[in-house]
Length: 91
Figure 1 (cartoon, rainbow, N blue to C red):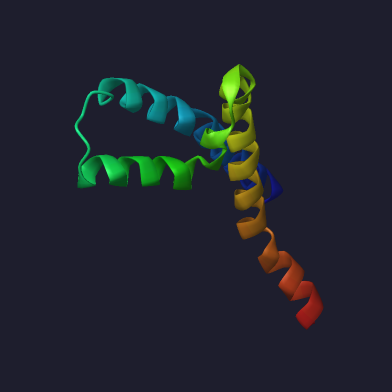
Figure 2 (figure 1 turned 135 degrees about the vertical axis):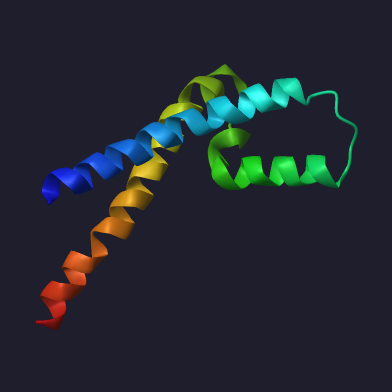
């Protein structure tokens, strides 16, 4: 059971690492798209799924995948472990 939880957290971290990479590639592909509802939706999706996108400079570019991976792993851990904590307090 513990191994499955750890695996899910690791998978979430890997997904979190590659989310900014995915958005960067799509951003380069669609960089010349004219301003429209679709581009506004695109950038809102970027900011929601990758909140560290707003970090400035080269340091932000290099840290963003790692920070996003940590955030996704933290969210996965928070959603997987509360069931255990609530069971202990209700008993």
